[in-house]
Length: 331
Image 1 (cartoon, rainbow, N blue to C red):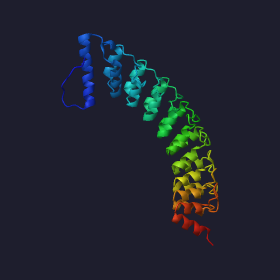
Image 2: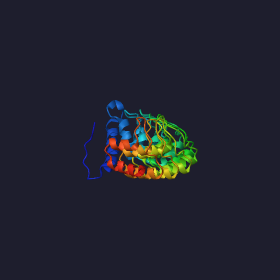
Image 3: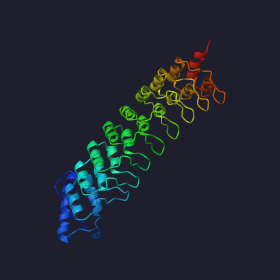
Image 4: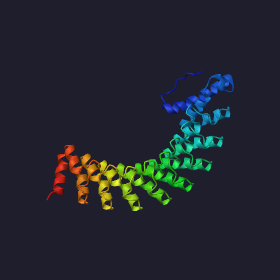
């Protein structure tokens, strides 16, 4: 049974905090102890209360026998909602009342993986103190460290590493926290992970290293950080592409220049015989072409079909590329 009440124009969340406890009191006065059999979804009410930090209602519902780990259809508990809302008080209350700190949703998310997404250090510390497993993973294979690295939360990464998180662990695609940080340009996190023992040359299922991933994304600060820590500037993925080939194929001029300055070989070809110069021609990246030629990229190399960079330029009607290449190979 629902009660309709009028109220002054309060903010919606404030009104909810006032109305729900009052409605529950009326229910208890009228019918005694509320039960699920009476038709009310008290588990849902508790999760809603936990989401908005309504400690009074959460406490009252728990006192009336609602299970602390009551979950919705996705397996999400009140503790998880409180973690997402970054409500330390509600999190502490639920843990004190016996909430499962390692509960999982249908996607295998845990309270700690939710905390890693929000970056709340205090809640993370509390969860770990109460026994949260830093090695638990989501359905895609991400552990809390990978999530914190992906989102670039240095304090969280430091905390998880201190608590024993494994910087060498990988997800179902073979990607480590270092690779996820590289893919999202998280330079500060890169340094923390390497200092903790992350493997710079670790490869994912496609044979990509953190440097290959960063170069493909054009994250030149990450490229610089990885090279400074010893990453192989001429590493090759399963298709034979190097960081330079990948950066050129995406038109990432700053990354191309940096790689060349750090000794990348401009004349390595992938399995199809494609060089970084050919990629820059195909992508119509004139400045990238000039940078490669300045570092002695060979315009006479041929791909698997016997075509040079100039041939590719002609085929694609790239007159600017033809002019640049003709000038470079001319007498």
